[in-house]
Length: 95
Image 1 (spheres, one colour):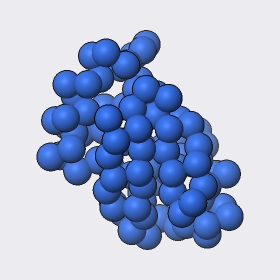
Image 2 (cartoon, rainbow, N blue to C red; image 1 turned 45 degrees about the vertical axis):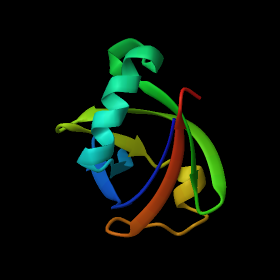
Image 3 (spheres, rainbow, N blue to C red; image 1 turned 135 degrees about the horizontal axis):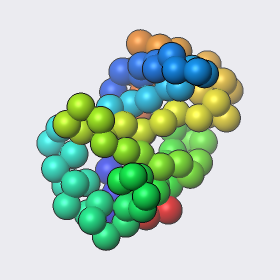
């Protein structure tokens, strides 16, 4: 199952900064159904994602009624992505 969306990148300032894209609610419903098959511990969902031509693997998780896709530094830094940027991401569930 493949998904593509554009969202504003945001930052969570826990013990270290982490950057995320929130999945639009209409796509979250489709993910919620598929998650039962592919999720593992604590509801994590493995994905293969691509942003700006850079492919990477990560795990998304549920937050605030939708899901969030982490944007790794190996993607964010070379593409010079910053908080507030609109970022397009494509991903496939079950990496």
